[in-house]
Image 1 (cartoon, helix red, strand yellow):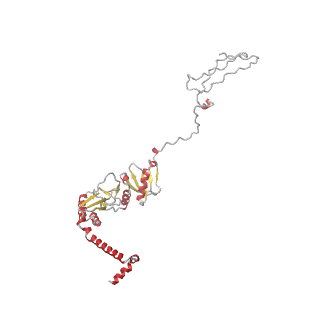
Image 2: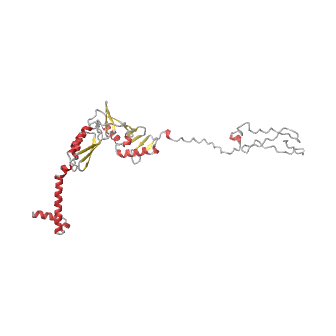
Length: 344
């Protein structure tokens, strides 16, 4: 006994040893009381009828075996207490149901227990022969699980296994489809593998998604979702997410582009409001309306040196039109007399 006391004394911190004897005794009594209460809790109270589960709520089941599985979970939960939940036992109950991915338990002190069943989400439809069965993203066969909406089909070589896909190619396709966000999963049409571009996802009413290798699937889907939500990427025929840090959208459809300007022919466009200096060189008539076009002046008649007959001058054209011809100017005759002005 003295040897045990000496060992305890050596292990005690120096601060405790330095305490006054009276305070030290109180600490020892408190420690012993704590040990007794802890033992009482572990050995009796947490499994006593004071905290026994009386009501079990099971949520999240949608498989065709939901009734059977619910009864098994309720029976297992009713044998527990809210202070002593056996998670391992509940996992053993759902182990025979591949559709169940996880079980989460939330005790509600003192007498209620809530069990939430997390089921696999169907990612694709495994097709082999005449069989069509939904599969999860990890390849788990989900027989009996209802499917909502359209899912991409995955061709499986050979017969369909009972629990999980074994075809490596089908497993890759299922994993790509299973990583899609819930908002995009119903828009997937098919998954295929190409020699040059690797894994490619074809979308309904959307572009091709090029994934390349089966790596960083979650990051690639996040990058694809960002690009698809960007208005500037609308009309693209493919989205390349092989490098999720630098996704690329391209192959914009021709009908979504603005029309290109016509090629420059070299002609200089006319300036609005200005008339060309030489109408004949410009290739345009002086007037477009024959009724309003001014009459051309008649050629002067030949006459004697002293007299000249002419026709009346035409009225000056509007300011916006080019004058037809300049009025004849008076000339000096060779006989010394001035030529007469034409009569009005």
